[in-house]
Length: 409
Image (cartoon, rainbow, N blue to C red; front, side):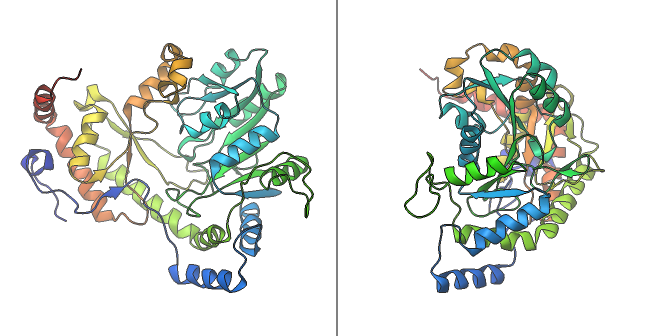
């Protein structure tokens, strides 16, 4: 891999791609493979593959200890975790959520015929704006779901206050926020429950997986019933439920990842710092910041691209990077309110979600994790600097491509 010194070396102008293999935003962290394989051998020898086996029990215990919560209920994925927690809390009617989130947050409600009501975000934090939340409460509102975007906690205390005053259920989608803290307390301790994701793209993964964490004993009992068909012992179904169980092999991967958790975070923080240093002088490209007084997993390197200051829109900068095999992403584009079925339900939602619209058009998420080296980050940042420094020529290139596109009918 060589550093590109001139605009002519960019792939969009015929130069070689920066990388022969794709550089992804969330390539999985593996941990110590030999330790994982020992666990797999142990699991196969026991022939206990699912149904709350010893690895799942150990994983739940260790996650609960790490977060300082009373209960961790491992799930097959975070979406099922959301669906079960929503149902266990008795949410119905309308629930207020951000549109600036992964669509699963909305789908988990809509799937159960609960209407997600999209609320605008604070443009500085990218999280729910509590002042806007309060404006959306109606007699049909049963709850609020905050999302800790990028692992930066929501305005937890104002949301708790709003929920108490209006007698609403409050939970958090903490898919981004495992091992993060708020005012010194670990995410997982807020609201009635919080839902974690251990999907393969997360810095700690269980292949596919998630968990619901809570300090509510009764809610824990109900969720454990619901994630196992409602069984309370052999042949004794006492509640409506589904199959939300985590498998033993997934828990084995999670336990292996937990052993390397500090290493994963250290690499992520190193990568974030290197991006920050390399891009700090690029006009119109601003990395989001993390509170140095709180714990964070640094699993997302997020920039806001101001097209007026940089001369390039976020989309054209992404096109330039994709040509180099650098698969930067638009999160959470275009916002849930512009996806089906929500754009049909709320055709005018954009008028109430101006901050969401703006941030969704500016956010650029860059490759990081243990699969991305410092040298690759240096090269990626060089491409960004070259593209912005030569914005008129880059725009001219893409304008020409746009003119040559065949008309759509």
